[in-house]
Image (cartoon, rainbow, N blue to C red):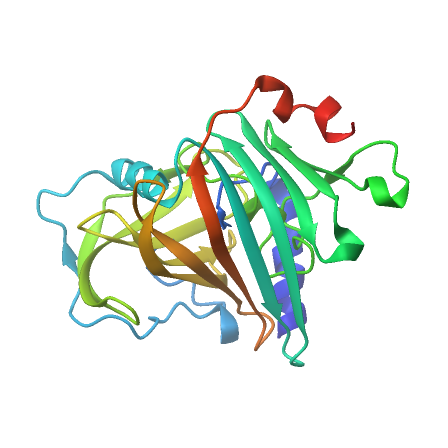
Length: 293
């Protein structure tokens, strides 16, 4: 089944996923966001769209709720500032039990892009990335490279569950349109039972990396707690839980993001925000010249 899902994922990328979403991670991030209606009945197995087990009450329409677009925008502001520097650690646990750790320094400016550099492990230290204009580029000076390599948006980022399109950008609003939200009670492992908006984000343009992203976002504070990612056929391919919410860079934000693959049982990548501060950067940081210096 894993092979079928992976093949379908690749086909969907070739069909039109051309530019990186801003998921910071999601992330992040993201990433990349809501509990949506299930996919077409033809999909099964890990592609089911059943609930995550966190719903504590029946879903209901959101009374006097902000629009889906507004919720996505507020969620982005909660995840990260408009311009920041962050040190993050990503730990990927394979189904075999093997564990890999990656540390990165990230510089980001909304509306421009991001510059990232690997700090650890030693064998990868100095590898640099530039995300700008919908593309992610990698430069490996230790390997004797003379030019940057363009990375495919849907490929795995350094062997993790996060895709290249999930790393380096932290905005969904450019690529996705938020549908009318609903409300529900959601049981979060850290916060307990809280009221959340459920927002389904659908592509604004064909090249958006995912066919649909569904997010649970707290009514109070617009903190994203859980996200789901689908390909265009409706197949759910991965999900992310956000936790370790604390005051950082001026507001309460998630500092841990667990991205779980649904086509590789037991594989999960955890992204930790180790430090985050608002900072401004000169234009030269976000250029190919700086990347390949």
